Length: 410
Image (tube, rainbow, N blue to C red; front, side, top):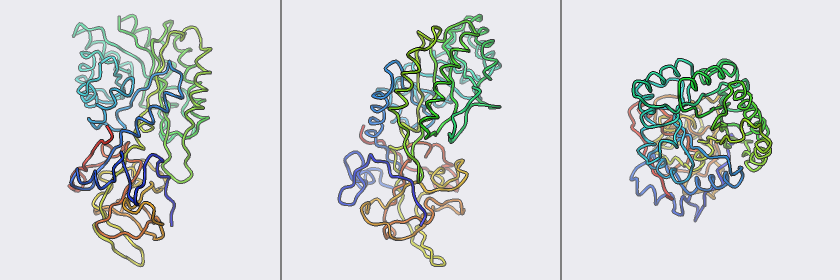
């Protein structure tokens, strides 16, 4: 049997059944009336927010990176939990504004902003994290036409990344941000043009589990922000330190030590250079906040045997859970944690492969994993489904339709 990643420690088991927000999974499935379904437990998110606030310096704000999960109900719930939102498209911007977030609580990054999205952000008073000099020119031109003073920051492509991160967003040639050596000139141009200069956005990578690497990256980020501000001759009102906190998906993964990161960041910020003395700092998190709150529930349609191997064919698949299938950037396919939702405390003594309903061999959600004996009608729970699940998957592939999504524990 092949190993699976660890089930997050936030869920109860009662009489063998998986429990979410105090109710057995079957209670929630009765409400959505069908499978597959994503169930997101807001109580788990609140635990993560509380852990962050307890660990981090009080001067560091918490931003939610909407791209991790843009479900409108989740965004609405986040308005009272986090300090601000980071969006990456005009569509995400519309959702966050509709959820009731104030414009000054929103920053907008992304390497390909359309003029219409820039105009909407400028009209609303959202901070735009500029990704290039040409984007800066477009933003200034649009603002001049509107007669509005735009709130502009610069996304920096730093000379470093987060060692061991799952996705490296900084260092070397990247489509994200302005190369560090060109940033001071751009900042002076923005200030001279009369823009409302908001500071720096420095995001070096994501899905990092190495606590020491995250600490070192934050130290380098603070130093870089001070150097750039000194060269530009203007203090940044705010610095987005990025995020990058990962969660354990696979065997051998361990959680990041948020308390150690917070203590180290406090030690870094306390003696910071004078030019950053009045700067406000932010950490932008998506996956770390919501990834562990989600469970994808999919019902077994068929149990079949081929050449002595057991296959559990389910009504979901990679069209909803591309990442769990190993097709969302994973180099070596490894198993997410999964279970039979009605037999959580039964031994996993049968080797099976859990496969989806699509006509492609890529549609494999569990590869030769150990599960209790299961039959058609039983429900497979796939964990770590709260981030980069439904919205990051090819929902229309082969026409099976979208999965239900429900936020519970609100």
